[in-house]
Amino acid sequence: MSNKFVSDWVRSNKVPLSRRITERMNPVPLREKVSQTIFKLNMVQRKLEDSRLRMEQKHKSLFNKCVRSQEAKDSAVAIMYANECSQVRKMAQTIITSQLAIEQVALRLETVQDFGDIATEVVPATKIITALKGRLAGVIPEVSMQLGQIGQSLDSLVLEVGEATTQSWSYIASGEDSEKILAEATAIAEQKVKDGFPQLPTMGSAEKGFNPP
Image (cartoon, rainbow, N blue to C red; front, top):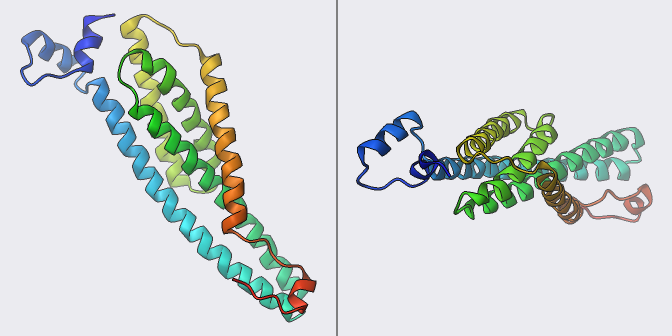
């Protein structure tokens, strides 16, 4: 383990000259970099929650319009609104999946206490962030870009640790871990969408006096 890495991880109140020189070469301690990443992830979470709420309101409005069109026997307009509802549901699921996965990433980063945690927590986190960036590119481009920047920071952190410790991490195990987290988040998101974004009634339901929520 290099002295540079150790001095970069913990910053004391009284910093010796040798450590100050080391920190000048690498001014942001690794623990602080992890904390900054968690803060950025929390900011992304708030944006995703705002987007989820907007999707919920948009779906409710489209849902009610579709029901009214069905009641008026205007099938063409009802189908148009039904298709829009379907698109909103898909975007909502992507957003909720991202929220759940990012929550897991933040929790894992909060547990990073020593150098070995970089391999077990940060590498899978990087893979998850990269996957979510792609999923959100067509839904919330701004958040996708932010995740791209966060992913680059995590990549840099992993490389820095690897150089300092002369170790390489197993991407096979980290890939399996990240895929499991994404799969679990997707399954939970699907149920949340079913609960929060009701299915549209059939024409028969509308004719029987279906009352939308």
